[in-house]
Each structure stands twice: as C-alpha cells, then as structure tokens.
Image (tube, rainbow, N blue to C red; front, top):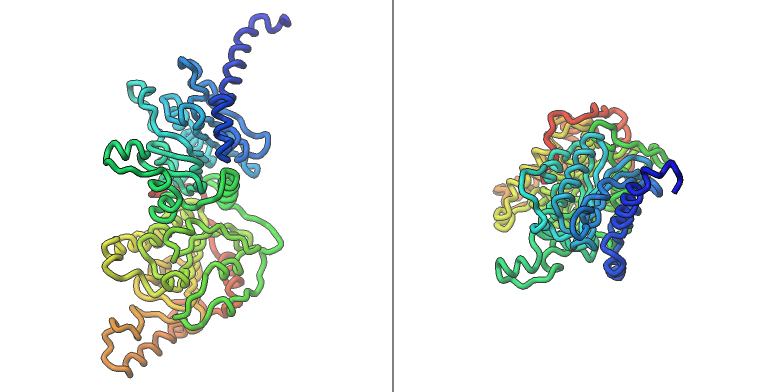
Length: 498
C-alpha cells in the first residue's frame, strides 16, 4: 500500500465497497427479472433522463447500516443536467424491498425537495414502489416529504413518471406534480389489490384498479400515457424544455427557421358553419412553430385541448375547444384539466393563448350531478387570476359561460382579443328551444344579430380586431411582441392545486 494511503486505505476501501454494493441494487436476479419485463432499472432510468456523464448521486450510503444492508434504501437520487440545465431526480428501486419507502429514503425525498427549492431547479421523481415500509419506521418526528413537495409547487417544475405499480405514499406524488406520465404497463392507486381485498372484499387486478384506462382517461390522475420507460423519460425531457428552471427565470426562447410571420391554411381546416365539427389538432399544428405540439392530458376532458408549443420562438400554453368532441362543450373533466394546466402555465410565466369554439358548458342532470357549475367556475377563476399575457381568439361560436371560461370577457387583462369573421355569440343559440323566443321571425332576427357578433363586437371594442383566419399566426405574433414578460419570481405564492 502506498505510504500516502497508509492511514486512509481501510476507510476508503470500506466506503468503496459499500458504494459498489449500493450500485448493485437488488442483485443480479432481481435486475434480470426487471429487464425481462421490458423495464429499465432505477439507475438506468436516471442515466436516460440526464445528459450523458452528468449524473451525481446523493445518499448512496443510506441504508448501508441496516442488517442486512438496504442498498440506497431503495431510492436512487441525485442531480445532473437535462439539455444542459441542472435538474434533481429520484427513482424508486423496485428491486430493493419492492421500492418501498423506509425512514432513510423518506428523508432523501425530503432532501431532494429541499434542494430543488433552495437551488431553484426542476425535480423529476420516477415511481415504481409499494408505498411505506411500515416495519422500518423509526419513532419520532421526521420531515414530511409531501409537505415539502407542496411547498415546492409553483416555484420549480415538478414531473413524475409512473413506470410500474405505484401505491400509497409514493403514488401521491403524481397528483401533486405539474405533469405526470405513465407507461402502458404501469398502474397507480392509493392501495394495491391485496389491501383492497382485505379492506373491502373486492377482488381486482392492478390494471383494473389503476391502469392507464382508469388513471389517465377516467380519473385524470396522470396526464399522458406512453409505451415504455424510454418514451416516458423522453417526454419528461421534452416537457421541461417548455419551462424555465424556476419561477424566478424567464420562459425559454427557441430560435429556429419557423419563428417569423407566415400565412396559415386554416380555411380548409375550419368550416364556416358553426354546426359542423372539425378537429382542432391540425389547426394548432398549422399555427405553431415547426408544427410541434405537446398535447397535455389528451385522453381526459378531451373536448378541451391543452398544449405546449413555441410561437414566434416563445414558449406558450394553448387552451382550445375541440368541436369534434361534443361540439367543444366543456364538461367537468375538461374544466379541471384546463384549470390545472393554466395554473402551471401562470406559475412559470408562459403566455396563454385561448381559442374558443364551443356551445357552452355541458348541460343535463349528469353534468349537474358531476358539479359542472363548480368545475367551470374554477376554470373561470383560474383564467381570471392569470398575471401572464393572455391572447383570446373566438373562432366560430361561444355561448354563455363557455365564452367566459375561455377568456373572452372584455377588459379582463387580455393583451389581445381577436375574432374570426361571422362568429356567433349569445347567452344561448337563438335556434334553441330554450331561447324562449315566441316566433320564427323573432328567432330569425336574434339569430342574425348573433351571427353579426364579430362586427358588433369589434365596433364596441369587445374585440381588438377581426382577422382573416389565414392571418391568425401573424396576429398572434404581433400580440406576443406587445406582451410584457412578467417579472420573474412568484408573486404571492399559491402553488398549483391538484
């Protein structure tokens, strides 16, 4: 042994041995089983998330003093760079005690949240675990990682990836995140099938309890579903690319060949008859830079599209009615989806673009039982409270409260309010039996007046301008050029509510 290591050698060897054991996770057999399922292990997931060669681990020796040792206490954590920017991340290791949460790994989760808030960098958490490891709990008061996560909300972007079965405490990270993604074979629930069977007698599979059809399409607990781990990590990286590192930074600007003015071919995509459906997706693709959209939560509340894009090189949040789904009517799911999306966009300074084409909020006994008034009121309140640039466009129609939740309200903080020619507005369509208009002549007169809304609205300054649909991109770019860039930093912290 070299002389300079004479005193250091044993300690260095001991630390190196324990770190090597931690790197081995649950051992070759369990790692092979994980690979056979078509899933990456916790360390592979983090290496895929971060730029090559930038990952630095934190807390590798946690669990090393347990008997037997619990490698990294089942939670691999650290920091690195994503597209050159620092990011913190932690991954549950299902090969170590099922990825369950012990006292040490709970502290490590808290430490990640603390560091993310202190250093003002995004946090990504990758889930595949069984929830709390009750037998490993130590008595006494300990810091709460969920509370730390709530306090982090609205200050830095928080992304959660559900990459296997996620239960209990860990699963709560998904609804508390800004953006949650799951793979097609993952599941998420408050309690797994064994506990459900014990508590209620219900026999159910993981997939039936919290697979993608439930978690994404029905409950809206997660936003997007992708085929596998690699796609989930790629989507997380793409999502982060639309946001600043923290609320104290300005949203990203992306230069490119398609950031300037150009005409858009919308006349063939949007039929002038307000009763004819069309898909809003191709319209948005035509409008934004390079046709690139990140559709957030497409399977939930699908009559409302919430998408991230770049417009004139600036990152923007788009909320648009989709007339191909119930004519664009806003139901409770769509309202909740839009409210959460706008809270996130507002927290990080993204300009918000509203494209309205709807007959109002959903009517009927089922809608009322689902609380449509409360959910729609939440969406209205969130859009009203936005302190970022708002750009509104009425494409064809907007009736009743359906116009208000889409930021059509005059003098409501819009940077720019636009309309297409021949839009139709009103409390409700004149042709409706509920309009209470007694005669055909009166209905025709009111319908004609509603159909002149673009002209009457512009004449009364309800709209700043009526634009040719082919000039919509150029008009929005002009509005963005006027729009102020909000002062960095949270103004009266509120966070993003689940």
